[in-house]
Image (cartoon, rainbow, N blue to C red; front, side, top):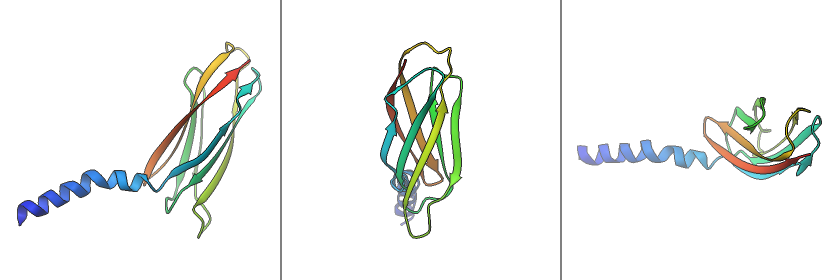
Length: 121
């Protein structure tokens, strides 16, 4: 009996993060495909947050010095959908080219990550 309880406890401990992570979903992520140096990159995310609270988002372009974060934010009571619009300043002195944008949203119930490419001219 004790072995079964220990086995059940281990299953719960290891599987719980996977179950809770399903509460947060990035339904849609739109990032400007092209942006001119010195201007702003617009990012729009639509999330299905389930019952998650105190969500935070982070937008990173590895080659750029800045990280854009926002939050915590909650969804309206009774609604699990959240829309976020964020602006990221693009420096004038960056080399033109294609860059990878990493978008993540996380809360105590889990984390989701998506990537998009942007061309900086």
